[in-house]
Image (cartoon, rainbow, N blue to C red; front, side):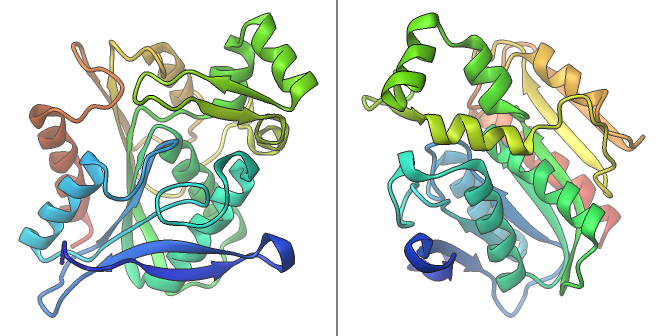
Length: 266
């Protein structure tokens, strides 16, 4: 399964039409709820956690879906031309195109926010779909990221670059190339903020958060707990955990949380 070549789904209209790369990995032994991976900002579906999940899914004969947002990995468009709304719409389109039966959504960082946004949309609008969300596992969910973790933390110079130049080239701790944070990303992101509006995601949620995470502080994730109107939500704090949470012990914890949710829906 790991040697599969990505397939592509066309989304959008006119000049905004683009191809989204995805991998749907399953076989005749497939059983239990499917697992869907939502990657983080500037990550792709071949990153460490996504690949570890693919290996686990193959060993467990579990359906597994991963994909690249536009401007990421093998999907089309330039990163700086994309918005949270684009990535949310693509996520929902890939889910609808590929999934049947109960699914466990697994989101990392920005992917955690997109997972929550997808759950809010599905729980609120209740569209008739061939799949349902059985639960979610979130790693350092960067909810309301564009506002609280970007704009509000930007320096005066960074804000000026966004307002006057249309973008801020934000240095990355995870690679040589900076993140191009566009005015469009910040402005459009304000349409998707949870702010002080609690919501019921419609399914259990498990959150894993490192306490040494400089990008998504654990205090930020504690604030998320107040927004979720559901009792079946747990938060596991990892004292020496950082943002990526990709160490062997972190991956073991992630897989254990997925297994627990899976057993409840098998």
